[in-house]
Each structure stands twice: as C-alpha cells, then as structure tokens.
Length: 215
Image (cartoon, rainbow, N blue to C red):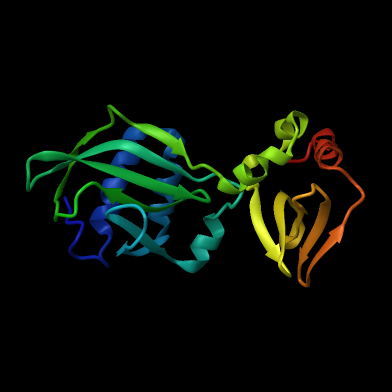
C-alpha cells in the first residue's frame, strides 16, 4: 500500500506496486523489475504535464545512461486498475515508457489514495505506442517504397542554422543521416554541427543497409 501524494521523495511503495503489476503482465516486461532492483530510481514528484495527475521518476544518472535505448519506441501501459483502500474503489493507473525505461505513471484522481497491491486488475490492459508526430510531418514526402523500409520510430526533427532536417538513420558517435523538405539526403555530424549533402537517395541509402544485414 502507498500514498501517491504524500512522501513524494520516498518511492519504495510506488516501485513495489509497479513490480507487482509487471509480475502480472509477464516476462515480456520483467526487464523493468531488473531496472528497479538495480537502484535506477532515486525519487519521484508530481509534474505539470498535459497528462493529469502524472508523477515522474528521477534516476541514478549512470544507470540511466546504461539502460536508455533511444532507438526504442515510446509507449504507455493502460487499462491497469489498482484498488484504493480509502474509497474501496478501483483507480485507473497508466505507466509510461520511453527509451526502454519507465519514466512515470498517472492515476485518474487528484485525491490521496492507498493501494492494495494484492488487488490489481488487468482486464482492460493495452499497450499503446505513442504517435511520432515528426514522422507524420514528413510522411507525405515519402513514396510507398520508402515508407516500407524507413523506421518511423527514429524520425526526429532537427534545426541547424535555421534549416530543418529530419533524422532517418543513426550513425556512430551521435552522427546521423537526415533529409530536408525537398528529400535531399545529408550526413549530419554533431561535433562540429554540420550537414553535408550526399549524392544518394533515401531508398538507395536504406536498402543498402538492409542488404548488408545492418539495423
């Protein structure tokens, strides 16, 4: 049991509840229990976001860098219900994952609640991937062949010297391949931050990777 609104910097009971939920969800999610047991999470606080009653975690910086995988798509675990002892009612709880790490959770009430970890319902559980709006912004530029081979989850808008680019492929050392709104292809380095025009098409560059078996 725990109180969501009091003891904001004490996360023992919050994490125990999340572990109980993950155990019920099954082995596909057990990596998050490993994260919790490793000491990744150091605190929690209520945050002002578009999501009502959202609580975000703070982390051990070294462990955060170890576990973060920016290639992984963000998603939300929804439809989780936990029993509130104070009201004798079930409360909706959602868990948010970004970069392969649980970053926070939300509940559907602003009131203080105490959770009974032995009463968790997953009848309406769903895993919902977050829409990549940057991909939506360039999808009209892409033909069907390009859409088939491009990884929409890594598309990211970047502005360099007032010029807009969209990342379509990660390279080594933080560098990447990007395109502009005319579908010109660039190799973009981060140190120094420079975009160099390439004489290749999107399809040629990405299909070459597929042929080489790289990801």
